[in-house]
Amino acid sequence: MVGRRFGALALALACSWDIRGVLGGAVQAPVLVLPPEAATEYAWGHDDLSPVSMSYSDAYGGWGASIVDALDTIDIFEEAVNFTLALDFTVTPTDDQIDLFETTIRYVAAALCAYELSGYKYPGLVDQAKVLVDNMAYAWVGDNAVPYGYMNWNQSTPVTGQTLTMEWGALSNFTGNQTYRELAEKAVIWIANLPPPLPALPAQGIDPATGQFVGSYVSWGGGSDSYFEYLIKWARLSNTDNNIFADAWAAAVDSSIQNLARTSTVLDWQYMADWDDGTIIHIGSHLECYLAGNWMLGGKLLNNETIVNYGLALMESCWNTYASTATGIGPEYFGYFSSDGNYTGSSPSDGDIAFYEKHGFFIYPGESDYYLRPEVLESNFYAWRVTGDPKYVERAASALDSFMYYLEVPSSYAGIDDVDATDSAFIDDMQSFWFAEVLKYLYLTFDDPSNISLDDYVFNTEAHPFKAPPAKPVYGSGTPLSTNPSAFKSTSGPLPEVSPAPAVAPKPVASGL
Image (cartoon, rainbow, N blue to C red):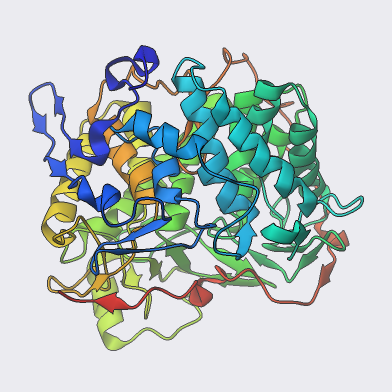
């Protein structure tokens, strides 16, 4: 078990098996127990548990993503460390293309955080992270500023740009090799300086071969999320003297407030619309709900309460998607009507409109599923830490109640195909972020706020906490980064699979019991 660096949390975060907590005796967290065989019998050594069929799938290299990703969550820590140390990361048993970003946020981040939080007890974890990153460095071809997003791993050749600053920067700190940090920073700085379609808001697609944007789609959601998220987090984690990271984030927030911020015509819910070639798209997503917490964190760092308050308002809108459904769980995508339009890319049905008139949003057609995502509970955790308002603990308890009632299957817990149906079919896939993020953010919401304090740690996008140096008094120059949209250039080509909203990655086949 990892030492007391986590205080009472003790890094075991036994939450992957048993979540408990009390806030002043007033709010009792429900108990969620995950049978040990869920990991050890059905999916040990594989990436994802298939909770309905009690089997497994391998979507992330076949190295055992759920075990590694849960290193700083799981209560069989020693066994998980030994498993990770024995892995051969030089080859992939699946012979699949490897996603740089997903590999970095899961395997690299988990190994480095477990090393740090164990009191630097297992240097072999750094060695394993180094093997992965050394191979992924081939994704920078020649003088390209932006890496290709995928690797033919067993041939070390790139396939298809990613933001990797936190994880690759941490590896530089642990190894003394600054090349990792420099490569990751180079990509972010390049993107931040490209003329964007909207001020300070890059297009979602980028071609690593040319370094130019593909299309003009702008979103804080999937495909762009971690670029924005890591700008301010890297500024805090690194305390870098280069102001571009904090300044680019501040400029993106300012531009979003001016160009993307909207409120619904019913109940005045705050949301950030998407934008494409001059058209506002009135949609939101579960994944995009991370931005509420990100704005709270960044607003505090910049001493800007306006940004913090926007984050809190966005959190209210995201929680409303949970509070409004039959299961008490939010959907994958949702649409809004605003005073300046209601275009979402799909025509709402009469039922959608009736739902909107009652709740101030509607479930986007075909996107009613809950895929065990963490982002609403992530931002709820930030709201609790920032405000101390017990309503956020109560909301975490409510979500946990819903999970236990509607998601439980004999082997563990599974996503559902329709959050507004109390008898929904299940989704036979449990990705590693259920262990790494959902359970961790729930546990930390019920835990003593002094443990894993946001003053001392910065979470990567997969909820792995990196120890940060003492905070600087000021982040950024105080002047948001200036960009020139009139010089925007774009090439043609497909957008990332995750966006725009209607083109989300296909879900696994839903299965009933």
